[in-house]
Image (cartoon, rainbow, N blue to C red; front, side, top):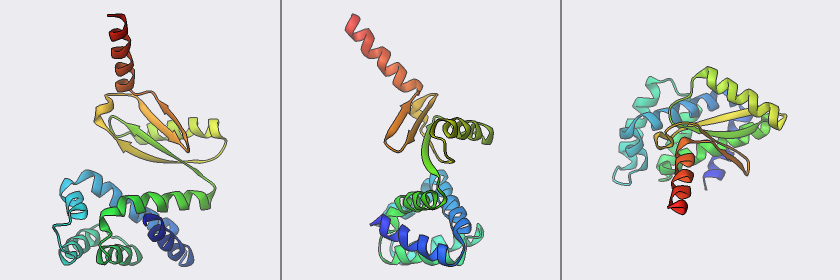
Length: 176
């Protein structure tokens, strides 16, 4: 289901030559969902009516200057009671956009938000490994304590401190 909505939005954005603008809008929405527990609850909770969700989202999105096409998309998925899946739709749209641009998408999970310099360093390393441009999708998971988890397609590299400590704990149990 998220794929169908993302595909429809992608095709409309492609047709109207606004892929970059829609991508930026969706990035803003994703960032707001990650940074605001109240907004996340509004989006995911079935307790709120579609009218309440639409009014709140319209107000918030107009303040951050979300485009009319993106607003219409959010209104449609809200009216169809699919707003809870917006993050999956954003992810699917990003994958379609990366595929269209010939990029590979890599999910990078870190304990804290990476700086632009760190993101660029990760991007450069991944480009050297895969030989193509890489679009990073950052995630923050404080339980990692440190290090990174990088997923590119079906490959995953987990260099997080949490995983290393878990491995050490297992090794200590085997010895003792």
